[in-house]
Length: 159
Image (spheres, rainbow, N blue to C red):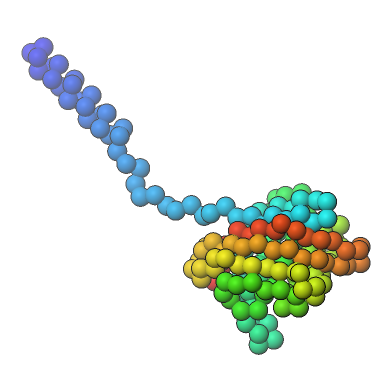
């Protein structure tokens, strides 16, 4: 009888251990972290809500890269980069349309300077595909001018 009780105890222990080691089901891919980071004048900006859209504006096919802070953040401001087309590549000068709004509500627009650029290295056109690249540009507005340098983009493509 002791032997049967001992075997039952060992069997139940093994079953409980096996249940504890079972898989947790299929893994759901996590949405990648996004960031648009840039040095604007003497300030570092790090936007955490970053999305990419394809839009037709006045019958021109464009890409909009949007950087914002979450609604729950106390930070204000945004960055919108509009490019012609919807592919990887490098855009410079007058082909760029960039709008920056600082935390005080001042709006800046990029100049047509030929050293201004946006380069996209990855541009998958699948929902939440990671679009990545770099940028640098000069901008002017009512509050003066700013140089945006060492910019990097990691944003999610939307449909």
